[in-house]
Image (tube, rainbow, N blue to C red; front, side, top):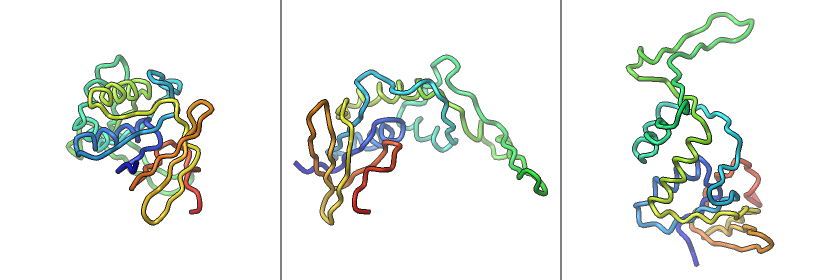
Length: 172
């Protein structure tokens, strides 16, 4: 079977891509090494731009993240300088007519909201599948993934490597 898109990883980047394409009539499947319901990381923080917030609002995810206790801290000012260098600049959200320049967001709250949105949208996620390689050809790419002791291959017109590792694409 030839998928339109295989996404390697259903963390924040892969999940957001899958949600953005959920209603486009494409055959999309995401492969994720996490077990279903597992966040897979400790509660670290991510810095997101205001533009990322707008994307998550459009995908109806931002409200769920914002509803989680202490999940979001707005970044209203940014100081830019170079140690020992001359000058500095301060960017302020109100000068740009924005509520914030960006946000520090709980990874756990964001992933929970994305996972819930993926389930509501009926996006296919294969949990417990660790992508071990992506082999491109001019016509398609082959994605190898292990699930337990079994290795499977999937072919797709397009593959998005969103696993955070960057070591998956062979021959390039």
